[in-house]
Image (cartoon, rainbow over all chains, first blue to last red; front, side, top):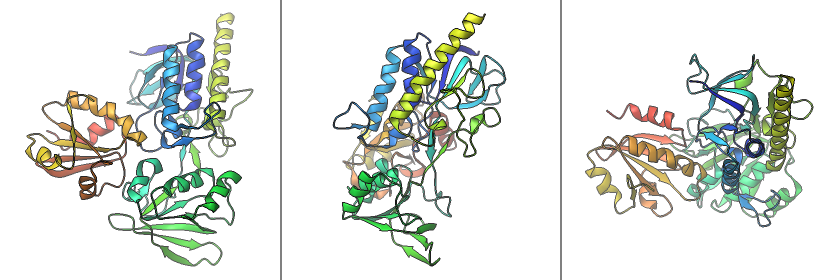
Length: 321
Length: 109
């Protein structure tokens, strides 16, 4: 049986859960399709579930752990009547209202939920390098979760690939365990914020390998090294490391909406006039539509906007009837 | 934690998995691992539903490095299914309930 809702929210990071808090307080009894457990950021709570100290979320003077922050968001929305389903949306039909959303079998005849309005906050997830042997060695030296796996690299040498804030955050976190962390970056300078750069440059355990790309991951049963290429001389060499952590950027989780919602060339959802998508009644917030700021606090802010936009839109629909 | 899930240690591990009449799924976890916390309720559900067919146990890797090293665990959560005391299947990384059961189904009768 299809369950009807005024507001369905797909995704449960800072954007989706803030939308849930506002929609719940507006008595719209939102349903949050929160995702499934995973060791990537594609999980309930989103990217912050894989972080440790969040130091830039306002209101927490000495920082807060990412998972703790997200569990507080979730409880806060539940307190005002938000419901959760721990599953992934497998299909949506936005061609007519109410909108249809499936979880589980996408070929099921009846959708699982029908929604008067839909808020999309599916976020973004980390890119992998897509080099040979990388996928095979995930869990055996290649890690998608530094906070989960750093422990296993006590007194070992490891590499972090990337040049942004996330790469340096990971590298700094991993110096708690590893003897040496080599940051491999394809350019000659970092994208990361000045404060992170300063911290990384000051840390004795962090070394930089500039203008370098990883071309292969080496190792039979566990990672034993990386084959890297100097992008200026084109020379290849091997770097002996026991672990590889990749932080080279993100891609939006928008495959569910291909052909139904307008997207930017890079796959992020396009929004107009606040959080509206090109489909009337469908709103988008958080990293799924933001490739510029990508902060927990901006995601939360846009989640609030989406809930207010959806509330207003539902009122207008009711008034027009 | 429910009483259906056994807490193992380096000392109790061998006897527990070897003496079990049913396969035992061991969850290698730690307090500081977010995805480990996410799958804890899933394992509780599976433990109730599969009671008598599958045993579920947890091993805290912080406190039990010997067993963690013996099975080359390098990422958590790692779930290892032991049949007659021997590892028969290994699942690395957190998964939803449906996918976990699917990956385990081939090994459970």
